Length: 547
Length: 89
Image (cartoon, rainbow over all chains, first blue to last red; front, side, top):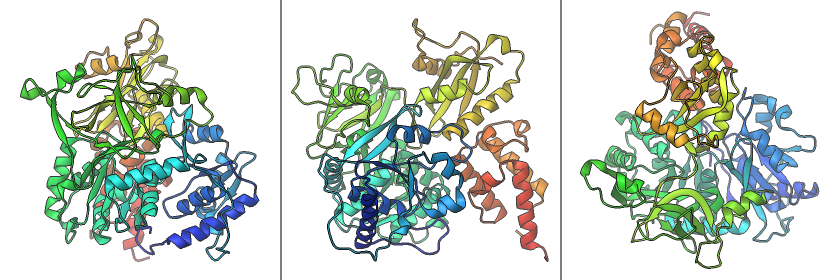
């Protein structure tokens, strides 16, 4: 069921209706000899995406969920994704293409691609007969492009078997039944929106209520009201979603809302913060919210989605560790109270899923409370990156030194497992920046910055994330100015040019833009930019700022 | 609201709001400059519209920022809407 932003009619799609429409669509696609081809799915919020997704699955076509590229953006991920997966079909709604975004027709259509619109297929068509494609567990169901940089995107190949295994893991951890109604605002091109919400509710046979992300961003309390209205058991999002509800809390807008039905408030895709959980629970407890419903989880597209999660009703595990010991790679109680840091556990692996903490240098497994790279193995690990054997080998095929024959997924995240088996994520090896649940690669942002104005020195910029006053991750840009330009440019205008380039191409508002003197950005002797060191200098006020 | 704000009042309100939330001095917010250049991404533009809705007591669509991409343009449009809603014809 879909709740439109401005109220009005609420379209619904039954299981039988979905099957009939997807089957009609799949027969059309099979008639176009599409098996094994890719289809790019670019949909506004609504139910059409789901029909298109299952139409692809039934026809043996590899679905590629994509974000609709922003208007006026010059360089965005969509072009590189389309080049990488070379789709035979482009799917969207007629309304989007004809009325609101006619620019997409020229922008996206390659020479070989055909447009397909799910609303052209009615449920009244012949419901009998076989699905047009015979499928095996190893066949690729869809490509999830959340990985890799904008210029070289990596499509994670998720198989039908992966989806079934991971759906079972989600069911076990969340304790879902056919009564587990979902209310979600997470976009469907995001793996969390698709797998945890839509596919899981289909897997267990429950009601799934979808609302547009923009409704949630504008009026987050409407999400909570919908949870109340539909007596939903499961609803969640990245950490920022919970802070957003707390900061927009208005008692008068919560009149009559009873959240005691909410059993699983999953929090994933961003670091889970203890203060976020505490504030949210304190704010909404008077409205029936049960703190034991807080459900931290950890996952990524390379593992289909879910890697670890708490169990329904158990509540989060919060541990206070010493910051200094943690920096040395050990989770231990703080030596002094002021250096204590609260960490939220991300739960445990589920069913046949396994997690190991490994020294990324030696490949040896580490013991309890030792910080290392998080490695994962199990039937939910995806088949690799689309047409990229090199990146696939590097990420998907790591052996543990002195361990068994199995191959592990290297997540690039740092963490530890405590003696009870709870997994804690403490940081990242890669300099990845996560803003509102979306991964951004520093290299992409630095490329945008250095190309936006000739006064900016090439290969002499660093971007990184810092927490703002509210504890949210924000983007900082540090960039060298070419020596000859220092007195020729207006620095405020230059900062505005950088700001505009980042907003248009990456849709992030930079938090700070720091212009520094030529040759003062920390680099290794081989010329590699030291983002970590630049970040430390920024925090300590030690950069050679041009004023 | 009994009387809808004038174009210049809307413009002032927008400059004040943007300077507070984008952490820029008011003097740096040129009403003729596009929102993207001021650093308004899609998430912050939603907050901007919500605050504007509350102040004006009008329902606004998200498209507004694309259709009227500067403070001057947006203020002119909103003042016209206010007049049309209230005026005799």
